[in-house]
Image (cartoon, rainbow, N blue to C red; front, side, top):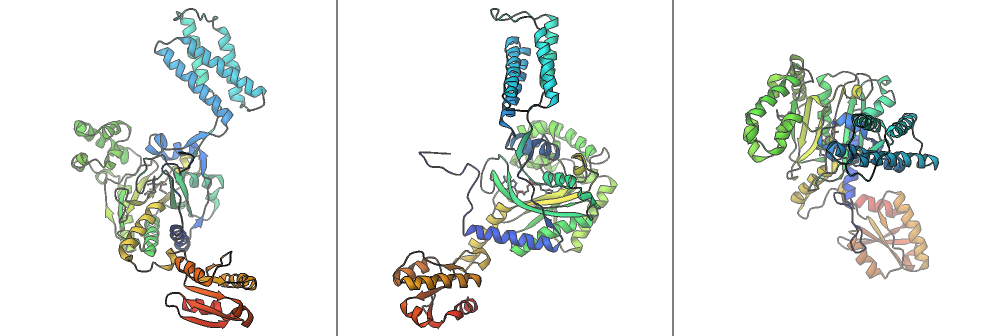
Length: 534
Ligand code: HAM
């Protein structure tokens, strides 16, 4: 981070700077415009939420939740107690591996002392469950015979052993802090908000979009950051009609077309629903097939045979590709209803003229999906080429404590989208002007000389800006030659020259910088003149 007194952005984070931020703004306003035409309204959920929300929605076993979240205790004092509790639990594990039980007893005693001290100091309020848990622990500790520190490995009798186990269970039940996490994605937050604001009472379906930063502790590389931006949309409630799936996909494709994103490829799949006659049956078939070829798989895939066989299909390892091609395909194991739903999604996409490719290996890395899954890739992105991912997640709202609710949505990786647009422009432009939407620039540079001219220049700048022009007004006086040089550097289109003559006559000089054409005109005419010729 800080080296020799210099600060740098943390690994995996970066500053977005002008003129590139102009492109970001244009992309975002285009998203708002396009999504608006499909009836979506904006939601802005908080950037941090209870860790448990993501664990439950995205899945505790997923990479995102198990390795990549930025999590912390909401209250640092309670966080410290939580750490002491964790330490006591570790000491119990060590005791089970034959370490001295004294470490465990000491850790629990210290924890209780810390709780009491902090409570007395009024630093933390401990909930009644944990308070009574602590009281019971004190009582249990008192029942232990006085511990003899002079004996390195005291013999523990059956009574003591049972007591220690009881103490351990009590310690496990204590909770001091609510952990929170920076959001790694926003679908969970949108579903939480849907429940919290009783959106099931709103006219169905509820259509929401969001944009903003997400956080995942991934290994940074081109197109992969630890703070990255998503533009996403979710449709909640109402039916699971395949027309909704198709329209959501049509909306992203319309957005990409409007941005003129190059090399767009849509891949779709259906992963069925979580029932023995559908996906669960398939997972068992897949697991059995994977066990057969286990010795030829890499370590990650071998682990996943047990934890999440579907994720093996996601593998990018070269030598696994041929093996994966021989595995059973999910399409052959879908139940009748899911098969029908998938067929209708495809038909609906065709009706909308949306070109797609089927990819039976598209299973996605978050646990909440069912039926339709999709991903979109674009050109110029190297290995991190997924610019959008999404799918259906009926049941997620219910899993989070809400009513049974249908859901489908997607999120676009905005960083990757911008990278792809920039790459395409680099290729196409070769000196050509970029579209105005992607440029920060200057329409009029005001070159002024003399105190009176400054007053006129300030008033002129205000008028021109009110007319929507981008105006640069130097704060200090400059000789005209220098001012015009500066205007050139900034890429200004016009220079408005205000010297004593101009101020006295009210006839201002406007110079077109591209060819040096210079014209005099009345003050009130400048804005219109520049706008017409812009
Ligand atoms: P996801 O596939 O995890 O899905 O992320 C969606 C997109 O976010 C990816 O396709 C990628 O473009 C971008 N992305 C993900 N991680 C990074 C990163 N570390 N750096 C840069 N870009 C990244 C979701 O997040 C789901 N919530 C999508 C969804 C919404 N499904 C239903 N509704």
